[in-house]
Image (cartoon, rainbow, N blue to C red; front, side, top):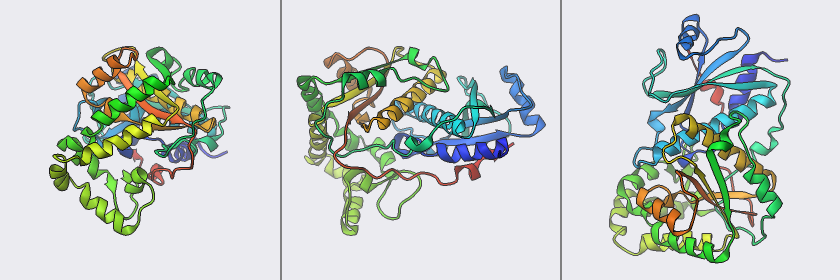
Length: 367
């Protein structure tokens, strides 16, 4: 059997398929290897084991979304999603992950770059567990049209019962609900049509989003324009690059153009047989609770993929506080901090996966 460190590296490469807001992939890995670095962990109440490896999963501030207040939540959820994916990937390597500590007070750890904020420390040890990673690749965002096939109540309940492998109490902090009533879906679609234009008219947020969209050669970070609009010719990619540039959009936002795009989002919602809403019970969840929410969300997404079900997040209605409050109130959704809203269903055709960082294990920083 390969060494524990080699299996950790394999698991990290598998975990790189995790989804994240804007496909920003804001995670970085630090391995505590030296005696001094390991000793520093005792300050956090971690009882060290000589048979385990210890890693910190950090938020890379250079890829952190900042333009909206909600981005703090989105970044923590993204790290939580990665942690859950890593936990599953470790199981596939006959290892297990044990959560040790979450950074709720902006603690700085010596030896870690000031541009990396450690959010969690994980112990990795040998295990007899196993996990089939085949479904990790099947979990993708599908922004295309969905079939009208209804998701059975049994499958819905199975998805509602999803829970995290890493945090076995994650379900206690979150609520998962489906919306199937056609009248309610129609009202939500109208709401999306009305407010989705903010995706383009909020100048600061759009400038940040635009940086994560690629129009030419595919990059490992961010989203190709084809992820948003499907296959495009080279000429059309260039046209979209100009059309959606922040400079041009600063003029177009005063026209009907953003409303036209928003109406297309609304139409996608209107023709979807079901919608998914996930929220925290608390209004102000702490860092650890946010990580647990992300971990639960990934298991929910993965369980859906196993049933052939896709998600298409529609985050715009959750990203602005006043709009989010109106969205929850107007449509009778559960109270608490909103986490995730998505179209959900059986896709009409496959959608290409977003690009990911290759050989993430080679980017591990050892201290």
